[in-house]
Image (cartoon, rainbow over all chains, first blue to last red):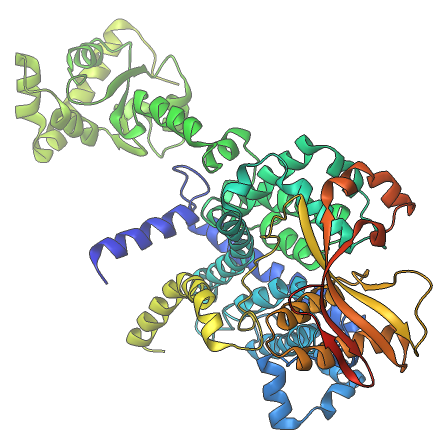
Length: 453
Length: 180
């Protein structure tokens, strides 16, 4: 695999694993998300149990009903292998389906149970689309079932949690991808076939009226009203195209998981009210794998969501980037926590010229307090034992701080040059620092200043 | 599993999602090559929903019942368009097959006969497949009447072309492929 492809794959993985812009997830968060994937799969199989158990789509009815056209390949294969008699054993088929679905709900880590449930569903969906029947509303349920086959199984080694994180998340991405791909394909076809018609102001009105002719015996609730108001129909049309076309992109933008999940659910409910097209199973899948997405940020962030929106979010992302570039990064900022009452420390701090060599040099008097001092107090280090330097997330105390400051010092000015020359050696820093600390103690005694509390 | 096995396993996981998406997209053009009876190879459904944006002046295919047991109905009787969109789609398929004279007889007997028998029972039925013009503006202007049932579909459809006439017992009566 070329280096470029590898880099691209790494970028894709990083973008999925980060909660948003520049917020990488911790291993603990990823493990938590992976556990939630298993929980979601339980819900999926519980829902499947409900569908099979309540006989929502009985095999026998599907077999005998509708105008006869050729069956789909799973049914044709089953016909060739075991004939068609098995299709009439409704109760036995239901019992087998229930057994696998219930089993998978109870133990989603056992592959055989998931596979059995998937196979039962495959035959069921195939028959719902054979012999003249059409039911595309079950496809997504089936594809998600396929994705869940890749959930990790039980491991016998001692690191089960760590080993199962990546496969669990892969199964989740696959489920989310197949759900969202269906919408993206739907949007792309509309553009492909609609072309210039898409830019007319009455495209949806005409589709609705044409649909009304086919639905005359059961007119959808909202259709008459929307078909009379072109502006409303057209707004809905544009909104539909936007969410459908960019749906697949949402997999890579966890900030949008919940929003798109909710919007697509509303889209299906509206389609039902407008066209009597009910993709009720899609609503459940969207709810499980997007609205309850384990990768979505814990807290809803309006700004993060707006920035993550395709096209619309571009100016907001640019603004954010500009804002970030103007602020010094944490790694460019150096804090020096020192004793402001100690004349030697004070002079040392003031003479240091770090501004030219680092982004921002911040002097913090330990006696004044503040968030950085609070952070230092959390360390196993007494401020009376020496100064502290903080760079990014790292702390350097005592002789280490002295050494680091010498390395960061500019190579201009007599003091800086001496500082660099003397303390750039860790050995000299280590042996000199106790002397400096002793000097500070003497000076504080002479001044009559108390130790830092 | 050994170290090499684990590495291979990890590589497989990495390729799984992009691989499946690529396969799904690749199946779109391959569908028509691999499958003849259906539009797509199951379960790689194309999701080509509502891609047809009709003109204001459009047309519909209709199944007109001309006579039941030799007796003509009292008023124009369209069995399809019906409430069942499946029947409507099935008729569309048969009408296109008959219009292009490609497997018309097979399509009528296998697809339309069961629909007619389901609706009218085992009787001798004369029926026609027609193409009718519709002006969607008429429907938009009278949408409240249509919703209330004061305006019927039959009043909106203006028969334009007879595609084929048939009898469920005797078979094809005549064909007027070039319109009537």
